[in-house]
Image (tube, rainbow, N blue to C red; front, side, top):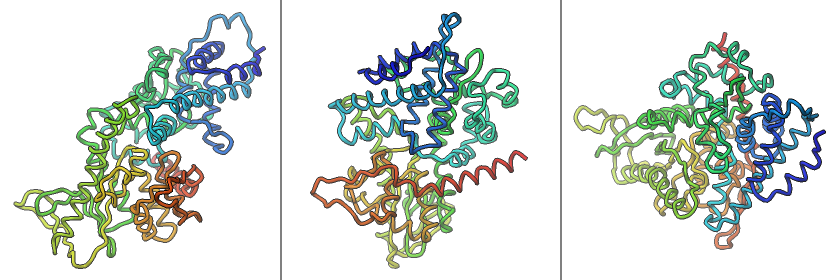
Length: 497
Protein backbone atom coordinates (compact mmCIF):
# COMPACT_ATOMS: atom_id res chain seq x y z
CA UNK A 1 0.00 0.00 0.00
CA UNK A 2 1.38 3.40 -0.97
CA UNK A 3 1.39 5.81 1.99
CA UNK A 4 0.40 9.01 0.23
CA UNK A 5 -0.03 11.11 3.37
CA UNK A 6 3.54 10.35 4.46
CA UNK A 7 4.81 11.08 0.94
CA UNK A 8 3.14 14.50 0.82
CA UNK A 9 4.63 15.45 4.16
CA UNK A 10 8.09 14.22 3.09
CA UNK A 11 8.09 16.22 -0.14
CA UNK A 12 7.03 19.42 1.62
CA UNK A 13 9.95 19.12 4.08
CA UNK A 14 12.67 18.94 1.42
CA UNK A 15 15.17 21.82 1.48
CA UNK A 16 16.85 21.45 -1.92
CA UNK A 17 15.92 20.41 -5.43
CA UNK A 18 18.31 17.45 -5.56
CA UNK A 19 16.38 15.78 -2.73
CA UNK A 20 13.09 16.22 -4.59
CA UNK A 21 14.56 14.80 -7.80
CA UNK A 22 15.98 11.78 -5.92
CA UNK A 23 12.61 11.16 -4.32
CA UNK A 24 10.88 11.38 -7.70
CA UNK A 25 13.33 8.93 -9.25
CA UNK A 26 12.69 6.30 -6.59
CA UNK A 27 8.95 6.83 -6.67
CA UNK A 28 8.39 6.89 -10.43
CA UNK A 29 10.68 3.93 -11.06
CA UNK A 30 8.04 1.80 -9.32
CA UNK A 31 5.46 2.37 -12.07
CA UNK A 32 5.42 1.79 -15.81
CA UNK A 33 6.00 4.63 -18.27
CA UNK A 34 2.47 4.14 -19.52
CA UNK A 35 1.03 4.77 -16.06
CA UNK A 36 3.33 7.74 -15.46
CA UNK A 37 2.28 9.26 -18.78
CA UNK A 38 -1.35 9.05 -17.69
CA UNK A 39 -0.55 10.86 -14.42
CA UNK A 40 1.53 13.60 -16.01
CA UNK A 41 -0.66 14.27 -19.02
CA UNK A 42 -3.90 14.37 -17.05
CA UNK A 43 -2.31 16.93 -14.71
CA UNK A 44 -1.01 18.96 -17.68
CA UNK A 45 -4.41 18.93 -19.37
CA UNK A 46 -6.23 19.83 -16.14
CA UNK A 47 -3.86 22.77 -15.68
CA UNK A 48 -4.80 24.15 -19.10
CA UNK A 49 -8.55 23.76 -18.61
CA UNK A 50 -8.88 24.96 -15.02
CA UNK A 51 -6.55 27.93 -14.58
CA UNK A 52 -8.33 29.19 -11.47
CA UNK A 53 -7.87 25.94 -9.58
CA UNK A 54 -4.38 25.04 -10.78
CA UNK A 55 -1.81 27.83 -10.64
CA UNK A 56 1.44 25.84 -10.85
CA UNK A 57 3.81 26.46 -13.75
CA UNK A 58 2.70 24.65 -16.90
CA UNK A 59 6.22 24.81 -18.32
CA UNK A 60 7.76 23.31 -15.20
CA UNK A 61 5.20 20.49 -15.09
CA UNK A 62 5.96 19.64 -18.72
CA UNK A 63 9.72 19.76 -18.23
CA UNK A 64 9.55 17.59 -15.10
CA UNK A 65 7.26 15.10 -16.83
CA UNK A 66 9.92 14.68 -19.52
CA UNK A 67 12.57 13.94 -16.89
CA UNK A 68 10.41 11.63 -14.80
CA UNK A 69 9.11 9.63 -17.78
CA UNK A 70 12.69 8.78 -18.71
CA UNK A 71 13.33 6.77 -15.50
CA UNK A 72 13.60 3.04 -16.07
CA UNK A 73 11.00 0.91 -14.33
CA UNK A 74 12.63 -0.94 -11.42
CA UNK A 75 12.66 -4.67 -12.14
CA UNK A 76 11.71 -5.33 -8.49
CA UNK A 77 8.16 -4.14 -9.26
CA UNK A 78 7.62 -7.55 -10.87
CA UNK A 79 7.65 -9.07 -7.39
CA UNK A 80 5.98 -6.24 -5.44
CA UNK A 81 2.42 -5.19 -6.16
CA UNK A 82 1.85 -1.49 -5.54
CA UNK A 83 -1.69 -0.21 -5.19
CA UNK A 84 -1.51 3.17 -6.88
CA UNK A 85 -4.30 5.73 -6.79
CA UNK A 86 -4.48 7.90 -9.90
CA UNK A 87 -6.04 10.82 -8.01
CA UNK A 88 -3.37 10.64 -5.30
CA UNK A 89 -0.59 10.29 -7.87
CA UNK A 90 -1.78 13.40 -9.68
CA UNK A 91 -1.71 15.32 -6.40
CA UNK A 92 1.81 14.03 -5.64
CA UNK A 93 3.05 15.23 -9.03
CA UNK A 94 1.53 18.67 -8.49
CA UNK A 95 3.15 18.90 -5.04
CA UNK A 96 6.52 18.01 -6.58
CA UNK A 97 6.10 20.71 -9.26
CA UNK A 98 5.12 23.29 -6.67
CA UNK A 99 7.97 22.29 -4.33
CA UNK A 100 10.64 22.56 -7.01
CA UNK A 101 9.27 25.95 -8.06
CA UNK A 102 9.32 27.12 -4.44
CA UNK A 103 12.91 25.95 -3.88
CA UNK A 104 14.15 27.46 -7.14
CA UNK A 105 12.28 30.71 -6.47
CA UNK A 106 13.72 31.08 -2.96
CA UNK A 107 17.21 30.13 -4.16
CA UNK A 108 17.21 32.85 -6.80
CA UNK A 109 15.65 35.36 -4.43
CA UNK A 110 18.59 34.84 -2.09
CA UNK A 111 21.02 35.24 -4.98
CA UNK A 112 22.60 38.63 -4.48
CA UNK A 113 23.66 38.70 -8.14
CA UNK A 114 20.01 39.30 -9.15
CA UNK A 115 18.61 42.77 -9.22
CA UNK A 116 14.87 43.23 -8.78
CA UNK A 117 14.10 43.34 -12.52
CA UNK A 118 16.47 40.44 -13.22
CA UNK A 119 14.49 38.32 -10.78
CA UNK A 120 11.19 39.17 -12.45
CA UNK A 121 12.70 38.38 -15.84
CA UNK A 122 14.10 35.13 -14.52
CA UNK A 123 10.75 33.85 -13.28
CA UNK A 124 8.93 34.87 -16.47
CA UNK A 125 11.62 33.38 -18.72
CA UNK A 126 12.02 30.09 -16.88
CA UNK A 127 8.44 29.27 -15.87
CA UNK A 128 6.13 30.91 -18.42
CA UNK A 129 5.43 29.98 -22.01
CA UNK A 130 5.25 32.88 -24.46
CA UNK A 131 1.65 33.89 -25.11
CA UNK A 132 1.47 32.60 -28.66
CA UNK A 133 -1.96 31.32 -29.64
CA UNK A 134 -2.17 27.97 -31.40
CA UNK A 135 -3.60 29.71 -34.48
CA UNK A 136 -0.59 32.05 -34.49
CA UNK A 137 1.69 29.02 -34.54
CA UNK A 138 -0.29 27.68 -37.49
CA UNK A 139 0.13 30.96 -39.38
CA UNK A 140 3.81 31.22 -38.48
CA UNK A 141 4.59 27.75 -39.78
CA UNK A 142 3.09 28.76 -43.12
CA UNK A 143 5.71 31.50 -43.42
CA UNK A 144 8.48 29.20 -42.19
CA UNK A 145 7.45 26.21 -44.31
CA UNK A 146 10.61 26.09 -46.41
CA UNK A 147 12.82 26.41 -43.32
CA UNK A 148 10.74 23.76 -41.59
CA UNK A 149 11.44 21.28 -44.37
CA UNK A 150 15.13 22.20 -44.37
CA UNK A 151 15.34 21.74 -40.59
CA UNK A 152 13.17 18.67 -39.96
CA UNK A 153 12.62 17.09 -43.36
CA UNK A 154 8.86 17.72 -43.14
CA UNK A 155 6.38 20.57 -43.32
CA UNK A 156 4.96 21.45 -39.91
CA UNK A 157 2.20 23.49 -41.54
CA UNK A 158 0.93 20.77 -43.89
CA UNK A 159 0.92 18.24 -41.05
CA UNK A 160 -0.49 20.61 -38.44
CA UNK A 161 -3.79 18.75 -38.06
CA UNK A 162 -2.02 15.49 -37.18
CA UNK A 163 0.35 17.28 -34.81
CA UNK A 164 -2.60 18.82 -32.98
CA UNK A 165 -4.02 15.34 -32.48
CA UNK A 166 -0.69 14.35 -30.94
CA UNK A 167 -0.75 17.37 -28.62
CA UNK A 168 -4.42 17.48 -27.65
CA UNK A 169 -5.82 13.96 -27.53
CA UNK A 170 -6.95 12.59 -24.17
CA UNK A 171 -6.47 9.05 -25.45
CA UNK A 172 -3.26 6.99 -25.63
CA UNK A 173 -1.40 9.26 -23.19
CA UNK A 174 1.60 7.00 -23.74
CA UNK A 175 1.60 6.08 -27.44
CA UNK A 176 2.51 2.48 -28.18
CA UNK A 177 4.68 2.00 -31.26
CA UNK A 178 2.01 0.07 -33.18
CA UNK A 179 -0.58 2.83 -32.59
CA UNK A 180 1.91 5.52 -33.55
CA UNK A 181 2.76 3.70 -36.77
CA UNK A 182 -0.92 3.17 -37.60
CA UNK A 183 -2.03 6.75 -36.88
CA UNK A 184 1.02 8.73 -37.98
CA UNK A 185 3.17 6.37 -40.05
CA UNK A 186 2.34 8.20 -43.27
CA UNK A 187 4.12 11.39 -42.14
CA UNK A 188 7.64 11.21 -43.49
CA UNK A 189 10.45 12.09 -41.03
CA UNK A 190 8.07 12.67 -38.10
CA UNK A 191 10.54 10.76 -35.94
CA UNK A 192 12.89 13.75 -36.28
CA UNK A 193 10.65 15.59 -33.82
CA UNK A 194 11.35 13.12 -31.00
CA UNK A 195 14.23 12.87 -28.59
CA UNK A 196 15.83 9.50 -27.87
CA UNK A 197 14.81 8.91 -24.25
CA UNK A 198 17.80 6.75 -23.53
CA UNK A 199 20.13 9.68 -24.19
CA UNK A 200 18.32 11.95 -21.75
CA UNK A 201 20.00 12.35 -18.38
CA UNK A 202 18.24 13.72 -15.32
CA UNK A 203 21.19 16.06 -14.72
CA UNK A 204 20.04 18.27 -17.59
CA UNK A 205 17.32 19.68 -15.39
CA UNK A 206 19.70 20.54 -12.56
CA UNK A 207 22.79 21.51 -14.53
CA UNK A 208 21.43 22.83 -17.81
CA UNK A 209 18.41 24.47 -19.36
CA UNK A 210 16.08 21.68 -20.44
CA UNK A 211 14.81 23.91 -23.23
CA UNK A 212 18.14 23.51 -24.99
CA UNK A 213 17.82 19.74 -24.88
CA UNK A 214 14.25 19.74 -26.18
CA UNK A 215 14.69 22.40 -28.82
CA UNK A 216 13.11 21.07 -31.99
CA UNK A 217 11.35 18.20 -30.18
CA UNK A 218 7.71 17.36 -29.48
CA UNK A 219 8.35 14.43 -27.19
CA UNK A 220 10.49 11.44 -26.28
CA UNK A 221 10.73 8.02 -27.89
CA UNK A 222 11.53 4.74 -26.15
CA UNK A 223 11.69 1.16 -27.44
CA UNK A 224 8.07 0.49 -26.49
CA UNK A 225 6.45 3.82 -27.29
CA UNK A 226 6.45 7.61 -27.20
CA UNK A 227 5.66 10.25 -24.63
CA UNK A 228 4.22 13.56 -25.83
CA UNK A 229 3.26 16.21 -23.23
CA UNK A 230 -0.32 17.14 -24.13
CA UNK A 231 -0.06 20.90 -24.50
CA UNK A 232 0.13 22.90 -27.72
CA UNK A 233 2.62 25.21 -25.97
CA UNK A 234 5.44 22.80 -26.79
CA UNK A 235 5.12 23.90 -30.40
CA UNK A 236 7.51 26.55 -29.09
CA UNK A 237 10.19 23.82 -29.16
CA UNK A 238 9.58 23.27 -32.87
CA UNK A 239 9.51 26.98 -33.64
CA UNK A 240 12.75 27.48 -31.69
CA UNK A 241 14.34 24.66 -33.60
CA UNK A 242 13.62 26.53 -36.82
CA UNK A 243 14.49 30.12 -35.94
CA UNK A 244 17.62 29.21 -33.96
CA UNK A 245 19.04 27.00 -36.69
CA UNK A 246 21.93 28.16 -38.84
CA UNK A 247 19.75 27.74 -41.93
CA UNK A 248 17.37 30.47 -40.72
CA UNK A 249 20.08 33.01 -39.94
CA UNK A 250 19.82 34.97 -43.20
CA UNK A 251 16.12 34.35 -43.85
CA UNK A 252 14.09 34.87 -40.68
CA UNK A 253 14.45 38.67 -40.76
CA UNK A 254 12.69 38.91 -44.12
CA UNK A 255 10.12 36.34 -43.00
CA UNK A 256 9.30 38.34 -39.86
CA UNK A 257 8.98 41.51 -41.91
CA UNK A 258 6.57 39.77 -44.31
CA UNK A 259 4.61 38.29 -41.41
CA UNK A 260 4.43 41.68 -39.66
CA UNK A 261 3.30 43.40 -42.85
CA UNK A 262 0.48 40.91 -43.30
CA UNK A 263 -0.56 41.08 -39.63
CA UNK A 264 -0.62 44.87 -39.59
CA UNK A 265 -2.15 44.91 -43.07
CA UNK A 266 -5.33 43.45 -41.61
CA UNK A 267 -5.94 46.86 -40.04
CA UNK A 268 -4.25 49.39 -42.37
CA UNK A 269 -4.46 49.82 -46.14
CA UNK A 270 -1.59 52.19 -46.85
CA UNK A 271 1.50 50.14 -45.95
CA UNK A 272 4.87 50.59 -47.63
CA UNK A 273 7.33 47.75 -46.98
CA UNK A 274 11.10 47.97 -47.44
CA UNK A 275 11.34 51.53 -48.66
CA UNK A 276 14.40 53.80 -48.84
CA UNK A 277 14.98 57.49 -48.22
CA UNK A 278 17.06 59.81 -50.44
CA UNK A 279 20.32 58.54 -48.91
CA UNK A 280 19.43 54.87 -49.31
CA UNK A 281 18.53 54.26 -45.66
CA UNK A 282 15.99 51.47 -45.30
CA UNK A 283 12.71 51.57 -43.37
CA UNK A 284 11.03 48.20 -42.82
CA UNK A 285 7.44 49.44 -42.79
CA UNK A 286 5.87 52.86 -43.18
CA UNK A 287 2.13 53.25 -42.56
CA UNK A 288 -0.11 56.18 -43.41
CA UNK A 289 -3.40 56.48 -41.57
CA UNK A 290 -5.42 59.69 -41.63
CA UNK A 291 -3.17 62.35 -40.05
CA UNK A 292 -0.67 59.79 -38.76
CA UNK A 293 2.61 58.29 -39.97
CA UNK A 294 3.86 55.11 -38.35
CA UNK A 295 7.44 53.84 -38.66
CA UNK A 296 7.79 50.13 -37.87
CA UNK A 297 11.10 48.27 -37.57
CA UNK A 298 11.13 44.46 -37.29
CA UNK A 299 13.84 42.52 -35.47
CA UNK A 300 14.06 38.72 -35.39
CA UNK A 301 17.18 38.13 -33.29
CA UNK A 302 16.84 35.57 -30.51
CA UNK A 303 17.02 36.66 -26.89
CA UNK A 304 18.48 33.70 -25.00
CA UNK A 305 21.12 32.76 -22.43
CA UNK A 306 20.30 35.87 -20.42
CA UNK A 307 20.38 34.39 -16.95
CA UNK A 308 24.00 33.38 -16.57
CA UNK A 309 24.97 34.20 -13.02
CA UNK A 310 27.20 37.13 -12.26
CA UNK A 311 28.45 39.93 -14.48
CA UNK A 312 27.99 37.90 -17.66
CA UNK A 313 24.22 38.21 -17.28
CA UNK A 314 24.36 42.01 -17.34
CA UNK A 315 26.78 42.08 -20.26
CA UNK A 316 24.70 39.60 -22.28
CA UNK A 317 21.52 41.52 -21.59
CA UNK A 318 23.07 44.86 -22.55
CA UNK A 319 24.55 43.38 -25.74
CA UNK A 320 21.18 42.04 -26.87
CA UNK A 321 19.44 45.25 -25.89
CA UNK A 322 21.80 47.40 -27.98
CA UNK A 323 21.90 45.05 -30.97
CA UNK A 324 18.16 44.62 -31.22
CA UNK A 325 16.01 47.12 -29.36
CA UNK A 326 18.30 50.15 -29.48
CA UNK A 327 19.10 49.51 -33.15
CA UNK A 328 15.38 49.31 -34.00
CA UNK A 329 14.76 52.54 -32.09
CA UNK A 330 17.59 54.24 -34.00
CA UNK A 331 16.09 53.18 -37.32
CA UNK A 332 12.64 54.43 -36.30
CA UNK A 333 14.16 57.73 -35.14
CA UNK A 334 16.02 58.07 -38.44
CA UNK A 335 12.72 57.83 -40.28
CA UNK A 336 11.16 60.44 -38.01
CA UNK A 337 14.06 62.90 -38.47
CA UNK A 338 14.09 62.43 -42.24
CA UNK A 339 10.41 63.29 -42.32
CA UNK A 340 10.79 66.34 -40.07
CA UNK A 341 13.88 67.69 -41.84
CA UNK A 342 12.48 67.60 -45.37
CA UNK A 343 9.56 69.63 -46.66
CA UNK A 344 8.80 66.77 -49.00
CA UNK A 345 9.98 63.38 -47.75
CA UNK A 346 10.29 60.91 -50.62
CA UNK A 347 10.73 57.14 -50.28
CA UNK A 348 11.83 54.74 -53.04
CA UNK A 349 11.66 51.04 -53.78
CA UNK A 350 15.46 50.71 -54.01
CA UNK A 351 18.60 52.04 -52.32
CA UNK A 352 20.21 52.47 -55.75
CA UNK A 353 19.61 55.84 -57.38
CA UNK A 354 19.65 54.45 -60.87
CA UNK A 355 16.31 52.98 -61.89
CA UNK A 356 14.59 53.43 -58.54
CA UNK A 357 10.91 54.37 -58.35
CA UNK A 358 9.11 56.61 -55.92
CA UNK A 359 6.68 54.71 -53.70
CA UNK A 360 5.70 57.35 -51.11
CA UNK A 361 5.75 61.11 -50.81
CA UNK A 362 4.92 62.90 -47.55
CA UNK A 363 4.51 66.65 -47.13
CA UNK A 364 5.90 67.45 -43.67
CA UNK A 365 3.98 70.73 -43.62
CA UNK A 366 0.79 68.77 -43.06
CA UNK A 367 1.80 68.28 -39.41
CA UNK A 368 1.52 64.52 -39.38
CA UNK A 369 1.53 62.80 -36.00
CA UNK A 370 4.54 60.48 -35.98
CA UNK A 371 4.58 57.14 -34.15
CA UNK A 372 7.39 54.61 -33.85
CA UNK A 373 7.16 50.88 -33.13
CA UNK A 374 9.98 48.35 -32.75
CA UNK A 375 8.51 44.90 -33.41
CA UNK A 376 10.43 41.89 -32.07
CA UNK A 377 9.86 38.22 -32.77
CA UNK A 378 11.25 36.99 -29.48
CA UNK A 379 10.02 37.86 -26.00
CA UNK A 380 12.29 40.48 -24.51
CA UNK A 381 10.48 40.43 -21.17
CA UNK A 382 10.55 43.77 -19.35
CA UNK A 383 13.22 45.05 -21.76
CA UNK A 384 10.31 45.35 -24.17
CA UNK A 385 7.48 45.98 -21.72
CA UNK A 386 9.37 48.78 -19.94
CA UNK A 387 12.02 49.60 -22.53
CA UNK A 388 11.83 53.34 -21.88
CA UNK A 389 13.45 52.69 -18.51
CA UNK A 390 16.63 51.84 -20.36
CA UNK A 391 16.51 54.00 -23.51
CA UNK A 392 17.96 57.42 -24.20
CA UNK A 393 15.47 60.30 -24.11
CA UNK A 394 15.12 60.61 -27.89
CA UNK A 395 14.11 56.94 -28.19
CA UNK A 396 11.64 56.82 -25.31
CA UNK A 397 8.69 57.60 -27.55
CA UNK A 398 9.24 54.26 -29.33
CA UNK A 399 6.94 51.41 -28.38
CA UNK A 400 8.73 48.04 -28.22
CA UNK A 401 6.41 45.03 -28.59
CA UNK A 402 6.53 41.44 -29.81
CA UNK A 403 4.53 40.65 -32.93
CA UNK A 404 2.06 38.36 -31.16
CA UNK A 405 1.07 40.93 -28.54
CA UNK A 406 0.84 43.56 -31.29
CA UNK A 407 -1.69 41.51 -33.24
CA UNK A 408 -3.82 40.81 -30.17
CA UNK A 409 -3.85 44.48 -29.17
CA UNK A 410 -4.70 45.63 -32.70
CA UNK A 411 -7.51 43.08 -32.95
CA UNK A 412 -9.09 43.87 -29.57
CA UNK A 413 -8.65 47.63 -30.08
CA UNK A 414 -10.44 47.41 -33.39
CA UNK A 415 -13.31 45.50 -31.75
CA UNK A 416 -13.67 48.07 -28.98
CA UNK A 417 -13.94 51.33 -30.87
CA UNK A 418 -12.08 51.10 -34.15
CA UNK A 419 -8.37 51.44 -34.85
CA UNK A 420 -8.17 54.86 -33.18
CA UNK A 421 -8.33 52.97 -29.87
CA UNK A 422 -4.99 51.45 -30.83
CA UNK A 423 -3.43 54.88 -31.39
CA UNK A 424 -4.79 56.08 -28.04
CA UNK A 425 -3.05 53.14 -26.38
CA UNK A 426 0.11 53.79 -28.38
CA UNK A 427 0.21 57.36 -27.11
CA UNK A 428 -0.35 56.14 -23.55
CA UNK A 429 2.46 53.56 -23.76
CA UNK A 430 5.00 56.19 -24.83
CA UNK A 431 4.24 58.54 -21.96
CA UNK A 432 6.71 56.90 -19.57
CA UNK A 433 4.33 55.50 -16.98
CA UNK A 434 7.20 53.57 -15.46
CA UNK A 435 5.47 52.79 -12.17
CA UNK A 436 3.23 50.16 -13.79
CA UNK A 437 4.67 46.73 -14.53
CA UNK A 438 3.23 43.26 -14.97
CA UNK A 439 4.24 40.32 -12.84
CA UNK A 440 5.11 38.30 -15.96
CA UNK A 441 6.64 41.11 -18.06
CA UNK A 442 3.54 41.03 -20.25
CA UNK A 443 2.46 43.78 -22.65
CA UNK A 444 -1.03 42.29 -22.73
CA UNK A 445 -1.48 42.99 -19.03
CA UNK A 446 -0.46 46.60 -19.70
CA UNK A 447 -3.23 46.90 -22.29
CA UNK A 448 -5.72 45.16 -20.01
CA UNK A 449 -4.94 47.65 -17.25
CA UNK A 450 -5.26 50.60 -19.62
CA UNK A 451 -8.66 49.50 -20.90
CA UNK A 452 -9.96 48.60 -17.41
CA UNK A 453 -11.76 50.90 -14.93
CA UNK A 454 -8.38 51.34 -13.18
CA UNK A 455 -7.21 53.58 -16.01
CA UNK A 456 -5.79 56.92 -14.82
CA UNK A 457 -4.65 55.47 -11.48
CA UNK A 458 -0.88 55.91 -11.63
CA UNK A 459 1.72 56.04 -8.86
CA UNK A 460 3.16 59.53 -8.63
CA UNK A 461 6.71 59.98 -9.87
CA UNK A 462 9.32 60.12 -7.13
CA UNK A 463 7.24 58.19 -4.59
CA UNK A 464 9.01 54.86 -5.29
CA UNK A 465 5.65 53.10 -5.59
CA UNK A 466 4.90 50.55 -8.29
CA UNK A 467 1.68 48.94 -9.47
CA UNK A 468 2.30 45.27 -10.33
CA UNK A 469 -0.30 43.79 -12.68
CA UNK A 470 -1.44 40.18 -12.30
CA UNK A 471 -2.79 37.78 -14.92
CA UNK A 472 -6.37 38.98 -14.43
CA UNK A 473 -5.75 41.94 -16.71
CA UNK A 474 -5.22 39.64 -19.69
CA UNK A 475 -8.77 38.23 -19.52
CA UNK A 476 -9.85 40.79 -22.10
CA UNK A 477 -8.07 38.65 -24.69
CA UNK A 478 -10.30 35.61 -24.03
CA UNK A 479 -12.45 36.79 -26.94
CA UNK A 480 -9.38 36.74 -29.20
CA UNK A 481 -8.55 33.18 -28.08
CA UNK A 482 -12.08 31.94 -28.69
CA UNK A 483 -12.37 33.57 -32.11
CA UNK A 484 -9.07 32.20 -33.43
CA UNK A 485 -9.69 28.69 -32.08
CA UNK A 486 -12.74 28.68 -34.35
CA UNK A 487 -10.69 30.05 -37.24
CA UNK A 488 -8.17 27.24 -36.77
CA UNK A 489 -10.96 24.66 -36.80
CA UNK A 490 -12.33 26.11 -40.03
CA UNK A 491 -8.99 26.15 -41.82
CA UNK A 492 -7.89 22.72 -40.66
CA UNK A 493 -11.33 21.31 -41.42
CA UNK A 494 -11.25 22.73 -44.94
CA UNK A 495 -7.74 21.42 -45.62
CA UNK A 496 -8.61 17.88 -44.44
CA UNK A 497 -11.77 17.37 -46.49
